[in-house]
Image (tube, rainbow, N blue to C red):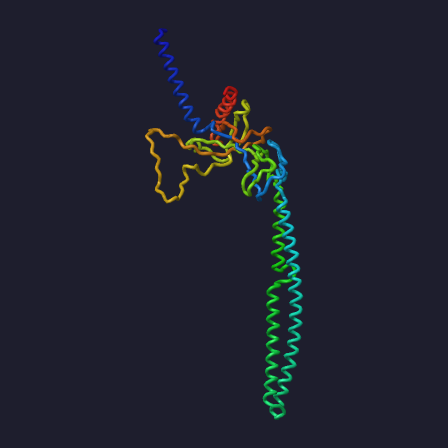
Length: 353
């Protein structure tokens, strides 16, 4: 065989290999897609105090594992202790004010009874005087004096009743339903709640990371002070849109982590993201901004899916750890062996790069 013939043969072999690989790539991208654009994401909780105060004590250390309810740090409780003492004094004052109003109300009711008795007496005298006036037993002036006395007594009764109404309004409901006591109790409960909030606890289990908080730091309410990385792992993978047309939630997946070369972890597709940032339009009063491009073949849009591991990992990867995800659509059984081969090939290649 001449050198030209050998060269021609190798060219044909290369072209045939290219065609075979190209066809395999098209089929693999449709029926057993794989992407290296995947990460192991662990939810990060940013712990923020509900009060603004100096930090008295930091209980945890950096990289420490904590459980739900464990104390992370404490704030200086001194100003909140003073607020609670003030709330207790206000409650005591409310009780004394209610006692004073109750005593005044009792006195006003006694005054009403006295005024009512006086009115009844003056009414009787006025009726007797009216009878005597008809028989010319008393003068008109004496009768008018009796009428005036009756009116005065009646006004005293009305005044006593108005005083009772005023005191009843000021006193309000009796017992625990009293408005003044409820306001004082509410302020006291808030003060006690603030004292409880000076101890900041973990809401869930996780690992403290990047701890910069020190005793003496002044923290603001609502501003994150501690980062807590949770223990559950969510693998997110970005695929081209057309690669996912045969994939559905529940399909099997193979995950290979860069930090764990040679090991393949089983999982399944749990969810698809509803969109990407480019698909979100803000109603800001501006016209549509249409991006321009002179490229004949544009970049494919990627869509994010979520993969859940079938079994928990013995050692949790850091949040953001790189991974490769191989999908195995259940409706294409013939793709399973090739997907198995691709996943193992990637697991071996991770030893190199």
